[in-house]
Image (tube, helix red, strand yellow):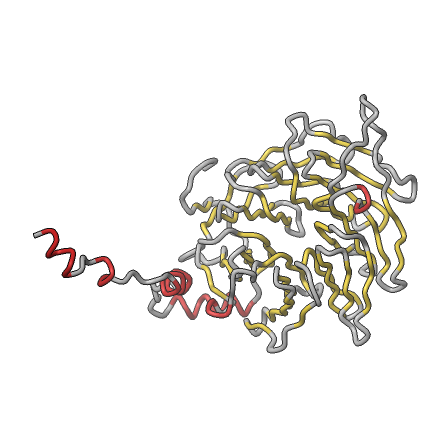
Amino acid sequence: MKYTTHNVKNGDYKENHVLYVGTQTGSFKRVDIFNEDNPYKQTNLQNLDAITKDSKVTALCWADDDKNEIILGRGDSVIRTFECDKNQFCETDLSIPEGKIVGLAWSQDTIVAASDTGKIHILNDAMDIIETGDNISKMRQCSSNRNLVAVGGKERKNNLKVFDLETKKQIFTSKNVPHDNLQLEVPVWDSDMSFVNNNDSCLVTCSRYGYIRFYDYRQQRRPIHNYTDSREQAFNSLTEKDGIIYVGTTTGSLYAFDLKSMKIPLHTYKGATGSISSITVDETGNYLFSSSLDRYVRVYDSKKTHLLYQCYVKSKASEILMRVADDRLLSEHKEASKQTVDVSDEEYETMFNKMQKVNDDASEPSSKKLKSIN
């Protein structure tokens, strides 16, 4: 099961998990892993006729602890809210003035969106804006203190920073590691980050330049631990759970590191062949979920590293969220299993309908050409 391209599910994997997947084409779908009859069933939640080439899903986050609402950010600056209970998007969409959305947060009943132009937009009545830099790659929110968000990007002036959304002030900015052996500045690119152990002062970042750094800004501005990959792998996605850091690379590698000792990877998870675009872990810490640009979503046993589930989602998966199926979804599944299954595929139908039609008449030789041949 390590390198198979088939849809697979381990017989011992029986959790009622549901995945919400955003893609680079702009589609947004639900994958019902809990469905015993068809664990690879995918439901398109976005109207496929309304998406454009700029509708790439670039950020997903939960709007509440009950995981009933999802906030979705796109490359065209649009923000949408999906209600899981009603299985539909809210009628009114929001947007920011410019830039691709690289992070979303929910604080004090307000949506907060960060753009790659370096601005954090608090979408309240006043539309407050916090300037963070000019080339931001990601924004993450602290789960224990929702007023805190961390941002990071490319180049030293856009290194890791923490902002208080209530006071709209910067409370921390990291300091780069000392110069290398040639006394040259070490390049900085914080491509993803996460608050650690629900602690609002501890953070971990990963970089396209092949490093993973752990910070505790109560102690110092420079990283306490610094792992640098000898193979110069580019890390681009990260999450943390119970002191274990999970990080994915642009070449499809997925690793786990123990925060106490970041000298070598604790685990390696195999199976992906495309860039790991998004990672998440369930509340128990036993299951690791990943999406990849090879158009697959996968589930691993986080401790044994076994590949438990793999599903082809037709488009390059850019963002994922996971939740446990509620009573509504379970009852819908029971009702649907009693009815005839529709084998049509809406996503493929839409894709083929949008293809340019070949004009058969234009390919036929004209009468003049036929005469010249004769």
